[in-house]
Image 1: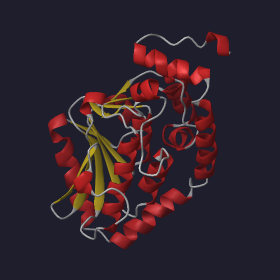
Image 2: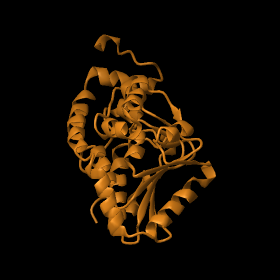
Image 3: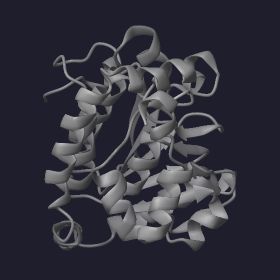
Image 4: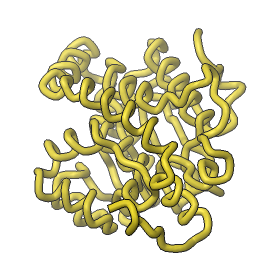
Length: 268
């Protein structure tokens, strides 16, 4: 099996529950479950294991603790080291992670247990279904920290919540509670925090009783209508790779690490 094996995971936890579904937990609560390069590598490996395991009918993606589902890329590490840290192949593979969430022929449920911000917001948007606890918080952060997602994180988001809402999320960077997210169609259902994983498990058990071939065709049929956005995503990540090396982008990361407002005025 290619990739990092679950026994060697340090940033996530992986298990197969009830011989029915894979539970993937981002396990960096001290960093609000923000992902670094290794985290992304481990998530990719976890989804590959879930893909290949015949016991697994669906996947649940969640975060450790009660504060965060995922706060996106580890901007503090980026500010301190200039990158998201070492990776298995020497490249930051978040675009590949986005792809595998869409491509795995099994439904993926995001169980949002707290803050889904920035790149963490993009992850839940890419999942097939989103279940949120009442204490979940949603929003974007990219333009504040010198980053952006001009691929699935914007164009696909607009398909879900509409153009005006998507632009509001990205241009104003407000935070939205679970009730607002459900009202906008950003999440499927809101439950009490103590019911979150149990409800996600129930959804997986219900889907496990269905034809896996039918579910695979349905998922890929839903995806086909927006799969052209993958090309836009390639262009966006190429641009982002160049942008994060600029002084403008680095000002956003430094300001975040120093807990001060960024000053982008001279870049207008």
